[in-house]
Length: 513
Image (cartoon, rainbow, N blue to C red; front, side):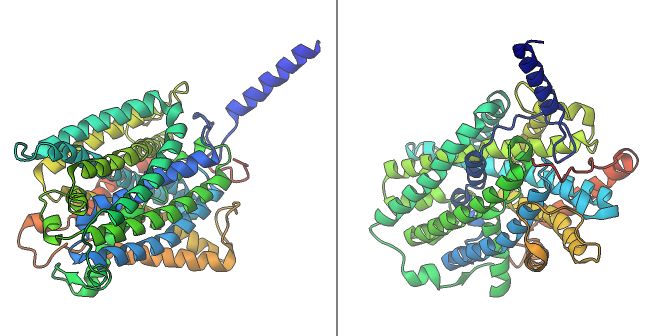
């Protein structure tokens, strides 16, 4: 045999091994491992897009203490999410699976893993669908506000205008995620520049342009609680805005099977998200609070997105306001595409383990496009449906925000709590140690703090936003949504899961990838 033929056979054998190698989730790789460390860190930053998320949901928290409430509630939320993020990073470093918390809960819960993982996976997926729906509303509102800036006096804003923009943005994202999936790492790297650079530019502009600033006392200390709750409760419920801002630490774990070195890179990317998200959102919160000169006008804009009014007050200039809103659009590109990717991977991971309806259909992957097309289209359809809720309810955005936070953190709880119990048991943890492991002392302490804080905050996030509650539209429907989705999942468990769902494949925790 010639040397050339021998080399050709060796290469063919190597390719065969690569194509049939089981990854950490126990499945054969079907998606291209195209995300470098820089790309996945960029993706974590863009999906979080913290300062935009904070500004987009600011109306959720302004009544809970005014400007001081926004700032200090945000900071506390960022701190407690650090414990959650560290716990997630530890699990991701051990089992880097596209299923994320679904897969971890199936393993950490031991003999109860099949049922715990089933419910964890669906709850996490529900959270990400609500996240996608709420996030798309931000640029939808921005586009309408940008149009309105130059048509004042002749344009009357209608809810269906926002929904039309919502539909067009969803269609654009779907097409890019499916047909230009291989561009996503580059788009995310550019997007991180827009998020960080745009955030810095916005902070500088808002700090420099206003002729008049709010006083330091009104920004940092003058508490204005308009909720009807005692101040302590108002502070806790107001942290929902901060939780929405920083609350995506599991996002990139669902892209684990598209990284060459996920065990080492995922914890670094989660850390990048937490650090950059905290710094940018905190700085942005401070400058916009100083820029507000008429808080009542912000609270009574008639929309769920008051940043256009804040920018107008800060700059006093239509062109400057337009530029600042355009920066938000640029920063949101990576966020929208990344969130679409995450939601599609969540459903696909459940489908390939036969957890979903029509699992054979939804588990199909286009290897050429490196995308689970059917699962991604399914998420697109659901997003359009949930977005339509905004047409009939002025509180829909707040409900989507709250539901996203409660659903995702509940799924984190179902993975972290059994992990905590197993690591405290005589037998030790049910998962192997990854490159990022918090050890026998720090690990249980951080896991305990994460579990305790999730239980506390999820309880208060279900409280009504205001007291007294005079109308059904003033209710907080987060608990009803959680309960309703829980009942739906229970029904599906008895119809399908109990007999036909066997759980995810046992993870290959010794794999280097």
